[in-house]
Image (cartoon, rainbow, N blue to C red; front, side):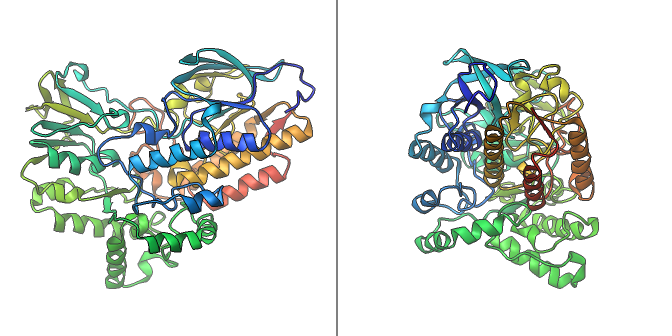
Amino acid sequence: MSNQGNNAAVDYDVVVIGAGFGGMYMLYKLRELGFSARAFEVADDVGGTWYWNRYPGARCDVESVEYSYSFDPQLQQDWVWTERYAAQPEILRYAQHVADRFDLRRDISFTTRVEEAQFDDATATWTVRTGGTDERTVRSRFLVSAVGCLSSANWPNIPGRESFAGDTYHTGQWPHHEVDFTGKVVGVIGTGSSGIQSIPIIARQAEHLYVFQRTPNYTVPAHNRPLTPDELADVKARYDAIREKNRTLSGGFGAQYERGEIGAMEVPDDVRDAEYEKRWQIGGFNLLGGYTDIILSKESNETAAQFVRRKIGEIVHDPAVAAALTPDHVIGCKRLCIDTGYYETFNRPNVTLVDIHDTGIDEITPSGVRAGGTDYALDALVFATGFDAMTGSLLKMDIRGPEVSLREAWAAGPRTYLGLGVHGIPNFFVITGPGSPSVLTNMIMSIEQHVEWIGDCLVAMRDGGHARIEATEPAQDQWVDYVNMVASMTLFPTCNSWYLGANVPGKTRVFMPLPGLPPYREQCDAVAANGYEGFALA
């Protein structure tokens, strides 16, 4: 990249923060387009969320043949997925294969954290300071965050948390060695996705398992199984068509399943229940795909919610336990969980559900957990308490524009333009940032769209002799209003969820992702076609 009339010397055209699926594809794309780049990654290998999340049962909730890169046709043909829903070790091997296949590691500094980054308006360059193995200060023209949406573990502020004398784990920071709970009394705090995936496996090992549940979640069976050679051959023969169809779907996945074309209330009760049953037997998010208005209409949503509630009552033998496991909120306002034997686990004699909805946890003691005035003696304690989603990892770094830091700009909640740029922070892009569809989608499809848009933008700047780009304040304000307007037309904001940041005490509650991938893609394309409308180029 030329100096574009800007004589400041730089080490790289672009610094990329993170080497998960977003960072790896960004590096690949930058190299392909002729830009010099360096990625800094705090882990000692690639993989991002699939490097850190090694808890028992960690598995993707998007089917493996879709939760994979589409940018290289030969990669699609060569890689062989073994299961319908890939487990963490297989996804990590895939990430490592991609890094090896495209020789990406030579441009990545591992065990290195970006501590701070300062933009200099006079030279239109970033000064980035790192700590760790590759501790240094580098200068770049652009800064791209690929830290991911679910990478900052949320440790709950429970009194006495540090006092527990037994083994303590967090599902988002699991050890890299095998953890054996055989013969131990274990407590799991949290029944979100990581809890729902890990609880059945921990229960099979532990002498006794106590599950501390504040809010029950909806979860549907994965019906996971090995993929047959014939199935894989069929997918690989149709990959282009599958990817193209996915780009037209709100979540960017599920092309192989029939989508409903009418509302849930437009059919008789028995027809609707039969449709839910058919989809329950298929498994996965497919359950909510039978009707067009499940996330738009409270009345329609209630039919799906009631179906799952009845299933819980049928599966769980103890009526009191079944009642405690039964959610009363809208289905889908929190990310629907996909499980293998979760509800069945509560029929085991060595599993006790502790409902803390009303009482909370009093404190953690050296010997265990005190909840509702009762002491539970434990040998090990697992925090399945999720993440400071969407913004946590970004705000751990000190990223500063000419007059405002990212922390200051987002003090009242994250504000972006397209989820890609932030007013006040020039030459800075966020892959799958707040205000984009991100976590409401197949993340890899959203990652590819963002990386390709950023790459095209950098080429346009290079060709046009531009050294500086920044989202304008009016464009950002209009975009935030638009995201809020779209969200308000759905049922997503109706319950406390990590989409709103409600799982992190003190975090400003803002609905962060934008529902609807296809219209979002069209808007991003229109912005680019109109000379990056809403951005100021200089």
